Image (cartoon, rainbow, N blue to C red; front, side, top):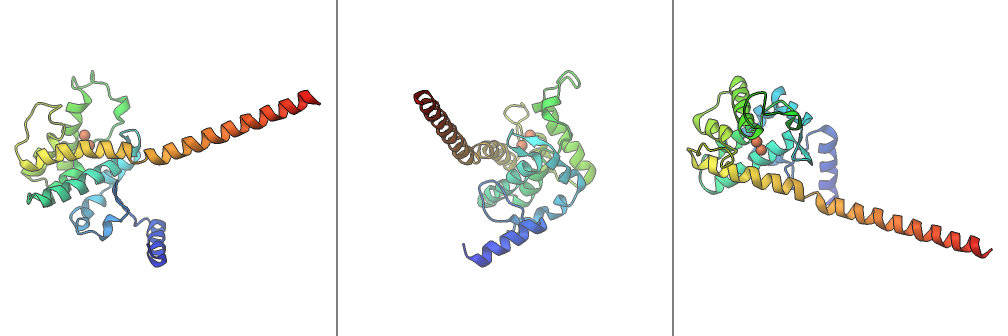
Length: 204
Ligand SMILES: [Fe+2]
Ligand SMILES: [Fe+2]
């Protein structure tokens, strides 16, 4: 990477214009995908997803962006409706509660069955949703939930959603492993130093 490119990335990060997806070092703002979802990303309801932790290691907005982007890429590759795939991907988890605090007793439904319905209802209240997008949002938990997808795009989204959950969890692991090893090494070094000091004190 050239120094000019590094400086450009630093500038974008500084201005808040750096939007990326898991597994990529590029900003999606420079990708043909971005204009398809730009209006959705401007909505407060979508931005608010940033405040919720998702899949332990990320937030709900980042997860939704990951699903949206990869759903777009895969549907485009398969010559499916990639634009609907991008938009539905961004809205598929548009629910506004903390998953950890959800108790099925409240609505008589498990979170896996309940949150796609909340997401669809909220999505329909803020933007027009077509039939494909509706199917993708409300059935994205298939086969955990029984309703079968009506469209090929929905099958793709169910796969991409799970794929993203896996990469979101695994990608930061090398960094964590590295810092864990570093910590263990410095702990061992400290213990050796203490032992050496104790030995020298006994001797004297
Ligand atoms: Fe979901
Ligand atoms: Fe999801």
